[in-house]
Length: 327
Ligand SMILES: Cc1cc2nc3c(=O)[nH]c(=O)nc-3n(C[C@H](O)[C@H](O)[C@H](O)COP(=O)(O)OP(=O)(O)OC[C@H]3O[C@@H](n4cnc5c(N)ncnc54)[C@H](O)[C@@H]3O)c2cc1C
Picture 1 (tube, rainbow, N blue to C red):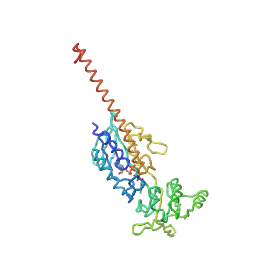
Picture 2: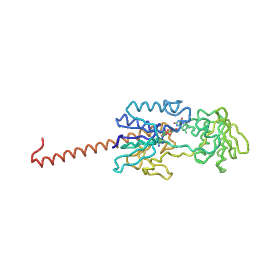
Picture 3: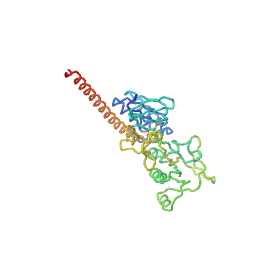
Picture 4: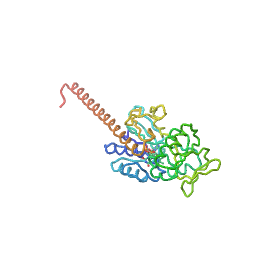
């Protein structure tokens, strides 16, 4: 028995937005959230129309309040398995607290994990003095001494170092693990970016702020802000568990409304779209919710048709048995 029309896994920008659309469409919806949104380490969010400078948790608290006001439900825990019912009529969600809940549809909005380069002192400053997105925080740090630090995500970093120079005049690139080609070096220097080669030993911080970068040979370059290119790892184990198709890059594929290859399963936000900012994730959640509602509407129509036909069939049988038309 499916207790819910939709279970939304993940209760941040994408999940809360989708769930609220469904609740306002009078669908029975439950959000299950492990409460670890990606931007939680940051003090403020930017680029979300009318919410500039808000704390990440305050945005979500307002979103949860809106959802609950329309009859949506929330549960704070982690989903550890998702199983398709053998009849194909829905899904069973199992949480780490032992509860199992049935639902007709799923919206996965589980986000992604940022895997940072392994440098001492880097992760402690993540979201504070260590950032990845100039569109989120470039404006705020434009007058600081910026470092860009090379890691495993070469394509992202090579773009990022040029991009951040658009905001900041004082940018130093530490290629670290990245070996530059001559044309790349030429482009960076021509664009006013200083390059410091050598293995990085650690990020130097004091009083909670980034102060510089120390190289393996002991040199310290004073810096106030560090940009890095993390590896983006989607939290898509549940989707892959129900055999959602993946693309060549290994990410789960969705149509423009977030529909996966498995009927009844949608995905929205960073779990399927790594560049999505908060406002894009919220938009994708909303769009997926509308598609889910249309899918449920068609199911409702099919059930109504089946019930009408059963009633008509029973009536015909009763009439032929009695030899009289039923009134
Ligand atoms: C440091 C930093 C700062 C940023 N600043 C900005 C900014 O200023 N402006 C901006 O637009 N964007 C910013 N971003 C990007 C922003 O974080 C993402 O766009 C946004 O979080 C994507 O939303 P989402 O709903 O897809 O995923 P998330 O916000 O990551 O939410 C996913 C939710 O799903 C939950 N979850 C995961 N797995 C499970 C499970 N199995 N069961 C239950 N729950 C689960 C998680 O705990 C989490 O609560 C920033 C990112 C970082 C890293």
